[in-house]
Amino acid sequence: MQVRELLLVAVLLPHSLHALRYSQGTGDENCETLKSEIHLIKEEFDELGRMQRTCNADVIVNKCEGLCNSQVQPSVITPTGFLKECYCCRESFLKEKVITLTHCYDPDGTRLTSPEMSSMDIRLREPTDCKCFKCGDFTR
View (cartoon, one colour):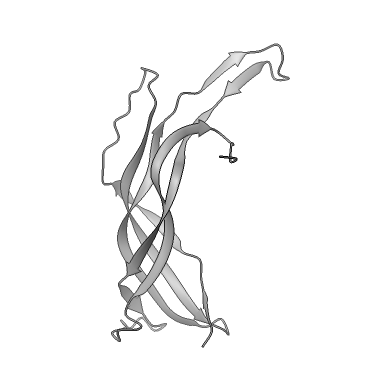
């Protein structure tokens, strides 16, 4: 049987596992790699587009979060009259992580218990390190 899979859906839960430590007002950058709990859902379809099963789990993954120094200064060279230097907290390195979704259900909502259908392994890439990068610079 050929299987078509739906794209992974991730929803952030309302809390993060680590508190952020912002240095507001000091100009210090604070771009960190933090742990976060998310709820993952993945649906699996057959070749005709019928859903075969849906699996989900609450998992812990890394995320980038924090503050980066940015500035706007007057400029006679730019058309707007201001030179903007914006920096964003983003991943500097990603690694692949295999996650097992352990709550699987058929299209009627019945929990699947057979060993081959009761769980699903998925792969995602998560940050292992975060840094401040110039906003909009995707060439790194």
